[in-house]
Amino acid sequence: MTRLLPRALMAPAVVTLFLWMIVPLCMTLYFSVIQFNLLQPDQRAFVGLENFLYFATDPSFTTAVLNTLLLLGSVIGITVVGGTAIALLTHEPFAGRGIVRVLLISPFFVMPTVNALLWKNMMMNPIYGVLAQVWQAFGAAPVDWLTDHPLASVVVMVSWQWLPFATLILMTALQSLDREQMEAARMDGARWLQQQRHLVLPHLARPITVVVMIEMIFLLSVFAEIHTTTGGGPGDASTNVAYLIFKQALLKFDAGVASAGALFAVVLANIAAVFLIRMAGNSLER
View: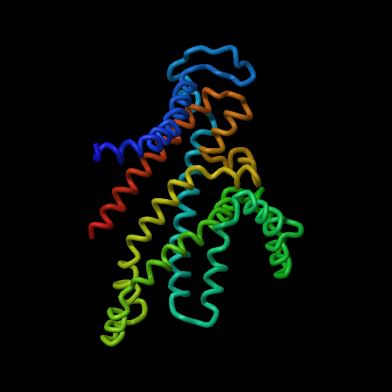
């Protein structure tokens, strides 16, 4: 009886969490195999895998997948490299280090939509944006970033918001670095680059793996920055898988195809999660 009591107390929370996850998934599975348009909700027909085929043969599908992968790789590369550099720069004590660290972390708490509006109107506007003013100060013509370089602009926005996350994780990891080893390396004549290569970077391998894993899972669903700034365009230049699903669901009102796309995104996210969890496990075993 005493063994069953803890399980009985946990049962309501477990059942609620299970239903919270399984009901939307079952509804998505159901809508993915039927023809269901939001403009004609009374007309439903079983179509099997046709929705998946339609989604995969969409002219924007290949571009959306490539944009998603490019966005993932670019943001993760920028945040890991930049986060490591900033963490190393702020690791040693200096006057005002606490304030600097708070300022470095603060962009992570900005909402994605606010982040996109800030970059769209204050930084990248070709007329009165900060970047346009800098370009004009050097005698160059301002660049319309969101039109000429839409995907790169989204990468910059998302990287700016996720860079503090990587910096925070890596700054925390550096606190546990063995200072005696660093002092011993200095006494043995190791140069700064040698210290970073043989001591600091191996120490940061595990937290970097965690940063990559978490960022990849969340960045697969980047939507607000694209919807607020470029609208997936020009054309499909900045459309990712999440935005393609949105276009199918709310612009074409095709809930069936959108559900099939959502399941594709779930499969893609799970493949990435399994791969990254194994990579993290191998890193922790070292």
